[in-house]
Amino acid sequence: MIVLRIIYEAIAQAWQQLYSNRLRSLLSLLGISIGIFCIIGVLSAVDSLEDNIRGSLDKLGSDVVYVKKWPWADVSGAWWHYIKRPNPDHADYEVINEKAKTVDLASFHVVIGYKSVRFKSNTVENAVLIGSSLEFVEMFQIDFEKGRYFSPAEYHYGSNKMVIGAVVAEELFGEIDPIGRTIKMMGRKYEVIGVIEKSGDALLNPLDFDDCLLVSYNNARGLANLKARQIFDTSVNAKAAEGVSMQQMKDEIRGILRAHHRLPPRADDDFALNELSMISSVFDSFFGILNLVGIVIGLFAMLVGIVSVANIMFVSVKERTNLIGVKKALGAKRIVILLEFLIESVVLCFIGGLAGLGLIYAIITMLSNIIDFDMYLSFGNMVLGVVVSVLVGVASGLIPAIQASRMDPVEAMRQ
Image (cartoon, rainbow, N blue to C red; front, side, top):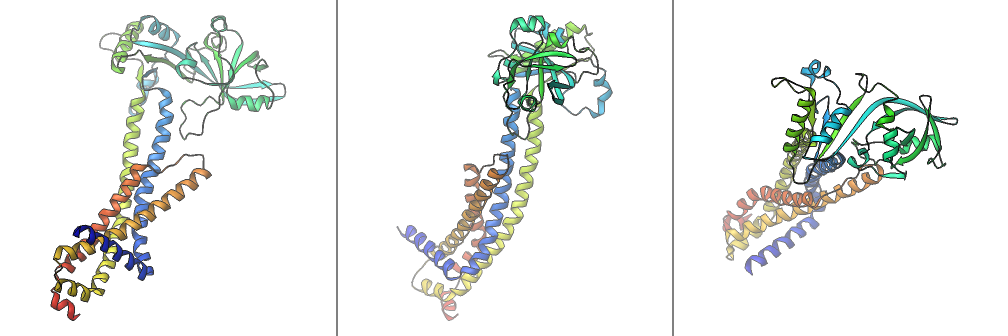
């Protein structure tokens, strides 16, 4: 009960000091508020950015291996080695589909390049033409705004059917329903059978089909030489079967492709097996550095806050020296005096920290409404802000509190 009474009186006294010295308290608390704003604001911005980017990357699938010509890594020192590799082709996709036991689903697509497409007097330039296998839509979980994907018969016979992106549909047809309409590309007529749902506003969108034209792989073979080095990109995509680890699937795919390409035992792979974790590891380092920068900035800001609050506490001790002497003369122990000033310092910093968190929340809410980027203040960062405020309060008030508790009562009452 005594301890609770001390805490209650210390909080009441801290509030009285705040109210009676409003300008001084405001200027001192401003340092804490700015410090909390800097450290928690930066951490919240980094968390929001990280969630946005990682959420976009998750669309690639954490259980999918991408067989490509180029690895998802820095190849600046061995560029010539990789440029000589062949592009993965449809035969690689077929052999994986046929022999791989660890693969639940495999697909293939080839990015042919930028093409123009026309409907009556409307033309869309630089739309990306992709030739895709039948499993492509299931592999990447593509949603349709209208229409459908290729049927097995349309795929097998290479029919002149096309699936278009949302932006291409808007620019070509406007308010007209695209499904069933005929468009022209590379001197051929294609029937539009589907419109892919518009992509979101993510900062990083690896599966943005808004400006794409999808034809079946069998149709694409008649449009371009798909084995030429001028092809933009080709990819065989393999999704792991249930209960199969990524390493197991990669090992099996590597063995199948090496045998298919007839590579000698000591020869290097002429393909790359990429997975999402390779990109994630790069972002781990990137976001780790951003968080470190935020913490360093916050520490400098908090140092200013500690000095300002410590200054207030020293002044407070000086102003109440006579009162401290009276309390000690009446039997107040050193720990009681120490706790009073320490709790007062903590309360001051706690209020400053809450003000800083309120400022962060207001700015994040405003920015989320202005820009196409979802920002948030997480509960973990709020707790961190409160904890940091309390620790700053302890650090700021410890020396003044010790000074007050060590005062001689007789000398203090003479002040």
